[in-house]
Image 1 (cartoon, one colour):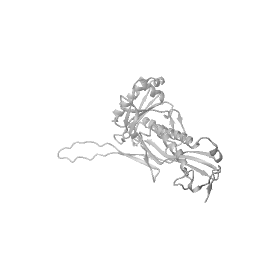
Image 2 (cartoon, rainbow, N blue to C red):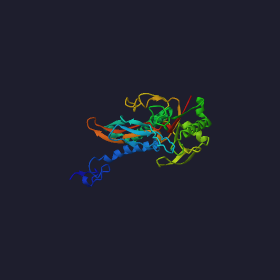
Image 3 (cartoon, rainbow, N blue to C red):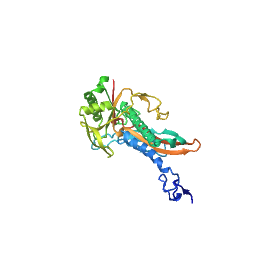
Image 4 (cartoon, rainbow, N blue to C red):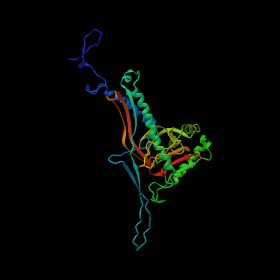
Length: 341
């Protein structure tokens, strides 16, 4: 029987009596359980850092690279005339399609010797950093599409302006001066103007899940002006968000984020010829967005997956995370944005 000698002159311990805490069911790779630290770090960090994930659902997409929604135009009322057969009316139909064709990833290679010579677990630290980047990337992709949805004049369901009936474009407010972004009264007025535009399109901000996203300086200016209160918010899908910050006059949650795009973006990782480079655009003057989950068509073919594995060829440990998802404007009347002049 193989023995383990403690090296202190004592009795040897049979290896079969050793508990290997890194093994599952005491068989196989002795480091198998350790990889969970990396996976958990990525997933938990995304949950903490993504401001939109609690509010916007993503549907699974399997067996195809496309998912679509159909939009039926509103029905037309008529009146019955005695002695006449009522004529039929037509409803226009449109469609929005999302193509998912890109896998985004993070990968790190750790040389075998150095992995054992560090005083910390690099996998945990890498997991935190990977989670932060995945969360930022997730939010930025959604904010890009929110801004684009808000900028549309016609619904993406429309091949002809005004059809299908009842579908409308986004809402937009432009500040009078660039310095207005630092004035909480003027920001509050701009948000109020957006809410008016929403309601004129039969969108009820407090009931339809509108979320307002601003940068930290605007958020704390609104908080200092006592326009924001702390409370519990229940999303449109019934999920309870504890400790949400809410715009008290409108009943909408407001989130502080650095992930609003603020530059001109070209070559975005999710932009392809299949989607017409849908994630590229000029966002240098974007100040804030107000958006409901109904404004998005979002799908995910590969949910976040993480792994730690050893490669004998490179004599290195690899730590990986990857994901395949996409988002496109859907019901654009549920999206609004505030822009600098």
